[in-house]
Length: 204
Image (cartoon, rainbow, N blue to C red; front, top):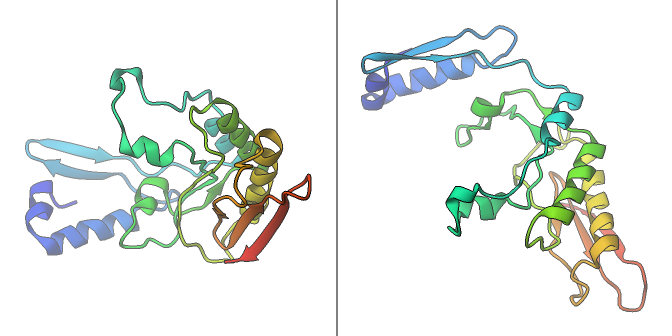
């Protein structure tokens, strides 16, 4: 690849280097890349073979603390505040959009977790994460309906059920913030005249 100093100063070669990265993003036939940085060479390994759902489940169910490292003390960390109630259900980005780097750091092939694993993590967040508000968030990324796993819709519906049964989920309010999936919005409404909540799913 062109050296770092070259792509830093030349937008044409910067675009050329970006194209090389995209061309060499297929884990089946990608080659290692080398780029000169000053007096050193940086070696970029080919992307790994995508994980299976079983491997993804094992990875995301490791005993993570889900809180910042103690060395941060009482510091407010904006990135942590944004993702502390997030749950990742898949990896990869097939679009290669110019405004997004998901393809570069997660690969082009979609890799998904099982529904059961996602539900277990929802329960872990509910039971262990300090300050949990009852709202599970996640990446807001547009996905073609044909590509969106059906597990998304089922998972978020199950999220509402678990949280509703376990914690009342903002029972003082008539509604909660909607859970948004790739192509649907799931809203849990609490009816004061009924013991059970109604689950409404609308196309989004």
